[in-house]
Length: 428
Image (tube, rainbow, N blue to C red; front, side, top):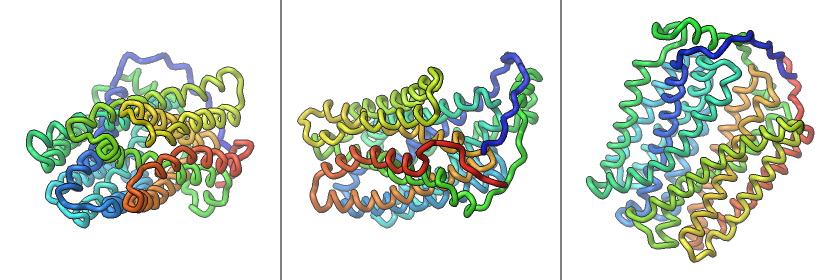
């Protein structure tokens, strides 16, 4: 059962705002991580023509990124617990920035795949480090808002990439795209090391803001064996949900520029606007998905009904993407794909809430790590499948059909594993 949550003392909102500067740093890091991981996808049509990559070859590059990402998710979760948010995030960003800029020296499938491995390992540390920083700097009453704002950086990064990368590439060449975007992250790292400390180590933090941040009691950390976490059906609800839906998001992220290039003949100058539309819709879905289930809870619905209703609505929003290949209109396809990304983000917001809904705080981190690894493994399989499908059929239709049905499958598996959506029974 969940551990009891003590009611914090009534402390008024402080005048200090240093914690929101921390939130902005975290938001910026997430945005930059999405820029760095998406540069290769935006450049795929150009690089494929120049170096003669096959679809299976590109799928191999994505596969190794996902393999490293899945592994790093588990490693960094434990590492951040040991060395803290400041050192953990700095290490993660340093690794991924060096690897990202090293892409400028690559050319073959093998060399890009090698560069993607440390990029993924570094980027896998972003989520656990962000959660650790939010826990240090925000009381429970503001934590969900801070996490939501931080995660919004993902879609902002996805919007910025197709605007920045084509302009840099057309001006200075594709290698400069990796170097210029890498420099943004170097600037962020310097700001992080200069500004981030634990609250009690920041001289500019007012006593009122410090008291507000520390209003909640801090439960003692408990290390839970993996086998104990894996023995619960609620853990498998999260693992299976992530395994099914994460591959769809990553496929959109890495292959959409190629789809627009091949289906509608767009080049670097042309596919930026439709990609921007897609990820703006995704951002809206992220906000509305969380708002919808929260609204149901506020109106008296139980947690089971609220979460699963949100899952179903989001799955229905994704379903029309099955028609994306058949529309002759570029903007019609962009809207259908954008709705699918919106549905994914709304589904994800509610799925990410499952560990905190059903597990005590001392077990939620382990569940999150397992789910992230499962999503990475599913994405590895999807990367190989997508490359084979495109190499064999030359069509994105099977991929869109898979996307249209995946969220109904995920909902069915979640309901099967936790039909009552009740707290997991764990013992320390």
